[in-house]
Length: 421
Image 1 (tube, rainbow, N blue to C red):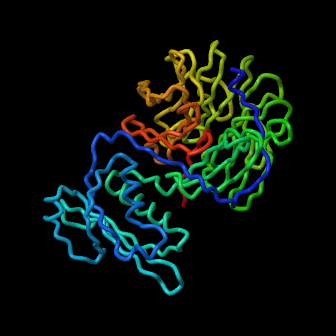
Image 2: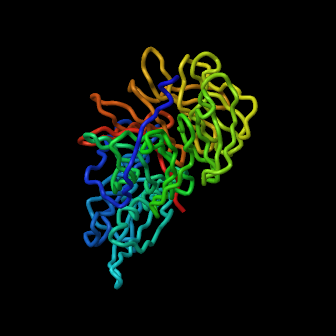
Image 3: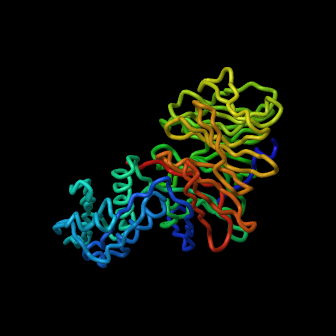
């Protein structure tokens, strides 16, 4: 259990620096059903820095739930469509659109999603975007297609954060969900751990050791301002946000063995929640903010428990296996993800809270740091490949798998950002 209380360091802020190395994404597996979608090239999309249709196709393909049919032609949102022709090609939906350059230098991107079965329009968007936001616009279109055809909000326009190591340098990086658009939030000659997004997506909490001891900070990604949240004697670790963003659950060893506390988002109002003779750590708020999941060795080995948000009796949640750590709850509160050690392998598991049904989701053997996508359909986690740290994404049903790697260096400690308003 002592190894679970990780103590590392970090220093030197830099949020605007763009990183050249991007995550490379490999996809395997498909959803239980794939929807065939024809995607036409957007008219005049060569005007924009990146091609809209290519990004949309990549997003939908990566999700595992769509079979992309290349139309081989340009079709605008105003073009008359022969629905029977597209049905004969096996397409259940058709995506069309165009790009126009506006007088102020921005681009007017328009798209329509057509239902070829019902011969009707399912959705459409008109977005005025700058050159720098071309990719975001394409991700938003892919999100709209995903939501209209799957019935769940898409996450292509969300962001992720993770820690990379290259040589002796560690970096906390923020990127698009597809690994593009990377920026550096923090540089250090010491390891960085436990990044966690705020619910509004403007801040990240993390553990730093720049003061030669573990200290919890919250950093505003827009203003670069940092706030010390916990700088007590001993270990200050494992920050996790409440759903309303007003509090953080943290783990402190200020009074001896590590215990769970809550603290206001500005570092005030510290409150101790657990009072055990063992180690309690890795707290996570429930989706409704009324409970806290935590890791404890009170039963003799590391297991996951749940207690009220103000403390009190903690009830054990995991019973299969003798070593279950790093609880993460899904956005709807119905599924618990965690890492379990069995037969010497550390692998990602999920637990249906209501039924108690458990499922192993990964086939790798050194997994850590799971994080749900904000729509609850995917889980990102860290693992190893060829002795190098990589990120992986798996759908909650285990069918679709992605691997995200850097050409040089390790990548670990992922956290998936929220939906942005």
